[in-house]
Amino acid sequence: MELTILGTSSMVPTKERNVTAFFIRYKTEGILVDCGEGTQRQMNIAGINRNKITKILITHWHGDHVSGLMGLFHTLGNIDGKHKISLYGPRGTKNYIKHLLQACFFDVRIDLTVTEIEPHGVEKFFENKDFYLECTKMKHGTDCLAYSFVEKDKRKIIKSFLKRNNVPDGPHLKMLQAGKSIVYNGVKIDVEKATTVVKGRKVTFILDTLLNDNCFKIAKDANLLVCEACYTSQLAHKGEAYQHLTAKEAALIASRAGVKELILTHFSQRYKSAYEIEEDAKIYFDNVRVGEDLMRVKF
Image (cartoon, rainbow, N blue to C red; front, side, top):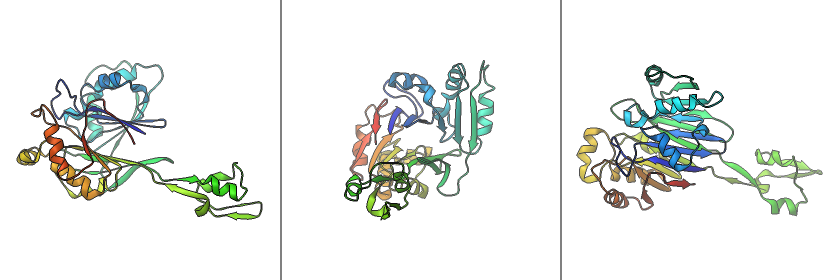
């Protein structure tokens, strides 16, 4: 599993930082979280094939989070074969997509499925055998969601146990991996003794919001929290006015939610260096670092 950070600026791109977008690579899935202006070019620089995008998660419809969609759809529509993408977003997403697709002439359109989500609390909205996606509402100037990618727990075979009990490799082990005991050559092989549970990994994205209880709920026990920190705590009044989190608030979310690692993003252009933001967060949470454009994180 790998996360590539494609943009870490807030509303205005700078020479060093593009606006918001993140890409999760997991097996055959490519999940794009937001798609700010210039996301395609950032993907090119990062060496990410845009054909690998299978899902797009939109946090909200402010321009700095979605203005790259038109170009992305145009490019993908001109690739041989019908490119399939499932796009998820908050209330109003279908209407925004409808107008976006009417904004210019598309020679060929992608196979796009659009789903609006209106969660009550933290809710799953997609699930397969390997992982699920969940979201919850945030507090911003428009309908806004936070997201988590959650890998499912897996059972790993303890080979030394099977060797001691003369159980060879074979299709019978699939039952153990599915969490069920088996009988082999008349001997019961207890799944709890023959396997160990490997905890699935979780990454949470909290972007553009005032601090609220759902922040702690969606981030609970995450391996990695990617969270906006538009301002230092010295400018908390600006965060309140523009409905953004400070570095201190991001760190408090990580601390209270039991997060293992925090990466800060979505910095105001007023900060020529994010060092001040990082130091502000470290007062409240140790394992924190500043997100940088094109940073790759394996977890």
